[in-house]
Image (cartoon, rainbow, N blue to C red; front, top):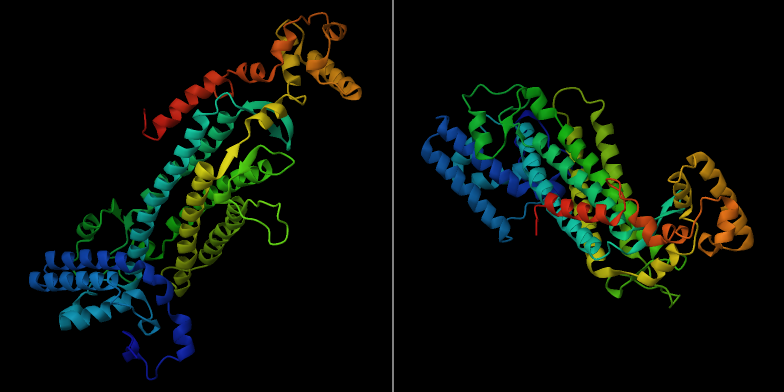
Length: 462
């Protein structure tokens, strides 16, 4: 068994069960590349400051890069005896470089080391997630551009409200994910602060240059307080909060796709590449992708709650509780990435909007009732009076089994003399949508402008 770095303080070995309970190597091995990168920067800083010789610095860097290559080749596979990835790397470095390897940890603690590794990891993951969001948005916009004049019922309280451009509906999700993309950028700025050199909690007696190591690692700045530097997990909480909102948005779209693909709605058809069947009911085609996304949303919420609860009572500075930040963070990252990828594929390849069904849906309800009231209001009738009149005609039409489009002009005039023959055009679904041309509305002109703005926001001005 590998002797722990702190074991000379103790008279007996750690109980095997406690050693396994204490170990984090089974999950923090994911940080190995970031640990190596951070250690290379630390070694170069030690040499620059004269704390170790230039030759020793070169030996340390060479040894660390050898470990990187061994890991990539599958030749370096530390087990639970190593306790954590940081100790595993240090032990292997000593095997390679001898006593020089023991100098790497000069002026550094596990506390600032793990904080640095986690930030390097999360910084890269944020960029990858932002890229996946862009891919998801691109598919949304691509579909929207083909469906500016495709109409879909709009709902409030899950009741038919007013018809919409399908493109307008999809662009609502573009706006949600644009906020997600921007929010991650805000989080990135607070992730990109270096704790390296904060030591265990109080800094170090060695004449290190924290700004130099931060520069090598492309951090924007360093923590100004060593206690804060080793104990801060605000950045992880902020990320999981941003990740939770991403999942909220994906889950809302998932719920709509699930509804739309049902027989009751029938607005989309699921393609075989993104659906499964039933083990007992051969007619079934199940929306597994959106259902899984909807289900996985809760686990990301859980990781955020767990992180908040873990942090709420921790005294300064480092506590072992902080080892619990990583599994939830890693799973949150992986879940968001997997869901973005799956939903992008579902939209691009896995479903097809049923134009005829959509057209029939918007033509067979009373979602044009507001436009009747607007028609009268535009002709001088007070809106509330017009609203009440239309409420009555809807009631009587339902009793007669008619839609508003089926009323005769005589019936319209009986309701109010202001009605003319142009009422039929005014309440046609396409005109109802086209007329809503206020900024941000569903009118076709506004949707065309929104599509152009979306392309611009993504950096694609074609």
